[in-house]
Image (cartoon, rainbow, N blue to C red; front, side):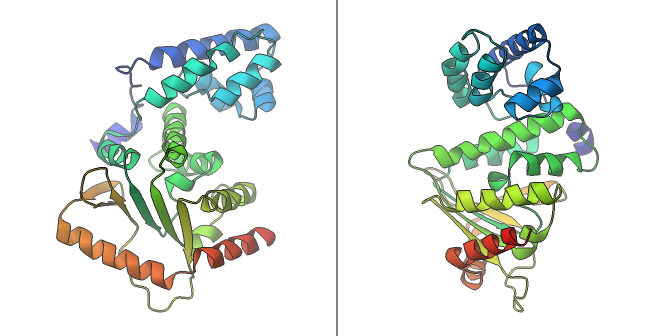
Length: 287
């Protein structure tokens, strides 16, 4: 049953009234593109997206970013028609419900309102730090295979989660990444390079600290896998783990305390944020 739910495309959220707008904008985008005589690939090159992404936008499956509408208006000579919709698009994006798999939604809601977020990652870059290309590489290679429509939805949802960095006040975030996460070339050299630059950019925010756990650490305090810690508004701190797509939201105070203690030891043994930034810079220079 779990696998069937993963293979089936998710139903777009309609109750918040945003789906119709995204679908209408997608149709308008397609109309202006075809009037200009451009293929999806040709148009994608003009706005910085691949043909699959353009197809998803035109079908209303993927959110059209405001900057894409702005570029499209100029490149397709839409006479301001597309650009005029940008304020409504921004408002709709702020109201759009996150379309995560059913089992993930309780965590996603907590994350969106959290005051503090802390992550330990030992396999890949956490979703909040991923570039779009890195996320696409992750979802495209997932087993069992996801169809293109679901992949594009997952990518859009992952990118939408990153809006929390723009909130005010922003949640205080910390990330501890195993060094192997930096070395693993998910998606290839170019994707890895962009992802390392993204870590430096996000790590430069005042509300974010990124630390690296060196591979050479002999006495590692956590061999039990990745986890997240978050403190929702007006609620006690909780923990979240996910192994082989079996999620667990941990609310028992004693269990959460143990993970908090473990995370404190991990942070103490990892490189400092400044040292971690230098290591990431070094790995970039070696590419």
